[in-house]
Length: 415
Image (cartoon, rainbow, N blue to C red; front, top):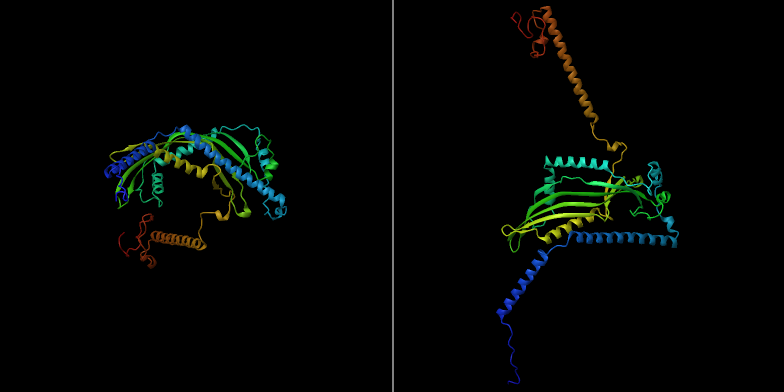
């Protein structure tokens, strides 16, 4: 029997030892996570800015490469099938003032014109921002708008109401400089550098003029909020974690690009102004955080990295090339459909005229009554006419020059 049934091998670790080893493994993993993920030293701002600039530049180059590849494909198809040229929808002809005529009439040479300083523009922008800050101090509209935006319908269930605790719009002003005019094609790509600018060729290719200027702002624009993280499992409000966060913009520098797109009446498209920032911008934040109520964690580096990364992504997805913001410009010529005010109908006008006529008739009646009273006072009439017996008592402004009988008095009565 001993040869048939081999002896069982005893486990090297008991149940208690295995439980203790498992708990120690979990503790070590949590300690490593907290040390390297939460309290790990973040990379320097210069390294982070360089990495982000490289990523943005690679996206811009990939977009440009895709556009150029699409153009080459379309050109190749036109060469292989010349009949495709006849199927194209005719575009409206160029405006009377082309790019070449505009540049010549404004004495601007793209190849040799020196960049402008924009000092006058900085003064106007500073006055506008100063007025905006002054209005914000005397009005809580901006706080109400921020609270509504932060506590919108998209707020998750695990987040409590968000309260704005601090709002600072800064004290300094942005400085615009080094403004220059650059012709670009219909896709926003610059023409070949190092070549003389041909205005006639640019007009045929649907080019437009683009103003580029450098922007620099060093300030402290702060928004601080506080809220609570709610744990609703296994039951509602099982745990609550207070969170306070303050985000400050300390510096922004980049290149702003503004261009004008003419209107297209055939497609009922208004004139537009588009603006975007080039991918060489620099945006630095200062983020402060506070977690907990009793045992508080202050300025967790990983939270700062997550918030800063999310803000950069939000900015890149909206107004960094190849993306841009588009603003429709109103038509400058007066039109009937744009007229506002004075919307009275003919019946309203007639009603007001009849009302005015009624006022004039009432004035005539009062004037006639006054003349009759004065004539009676001067003539010493012994009796008041029946037509005046039941009139109302005269007003205080009516003066009677004579000392005759008062209107409405009985014959023979003393005044």
